Length: 205
Image (cartoon, rainbow, N blue to C red; front, side, top):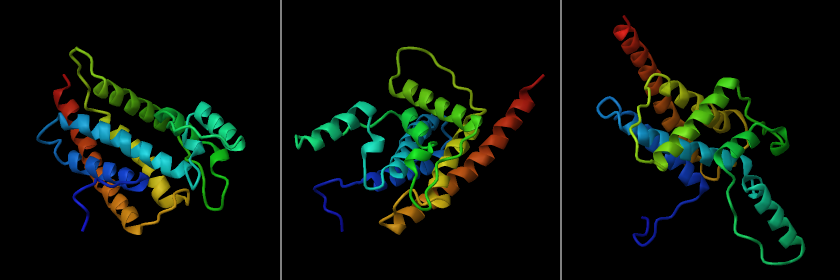
């Protein structure tokens, strides 16, 4: 039984819970298109969480901003109080996940991204920022293409779940839950991709 006094989480729990929330939301899209906002927001959080897990294997310096990491090392060597961690931004974390220098131990490999992956991660970050920092405006977001964006981002999640040892899983149940969640999302996004394309073809002159 969990205590009712505290909400307890960790970097592993947060990444998996975010992915599971995406899985819950995608099945509501047929009845409520506004759920795309929460799919985008939660997927951004989940992808960021998995990138942090992949980069941070007992050492959180790779996930900090460059300035924060340098300041921490200086303070450590001077035996001074170390600064509070400042997480690097989403796209910088993504860039790091593609670099060999951050995956130099046995069985770990960087994510092999295509130009399409790069475009999808940029789109996800832009859409998430627009929703999170919503300014007074009218905004129309084309649905066709969104399922493909989600599938591209899921490629990174799947990669770090199943194709490399970059993430140390202390709780295999969390890893199993993440695998189930990403499979459910992938299945629903594949179906929606076909549906949106058919809708476009039906409305074409």
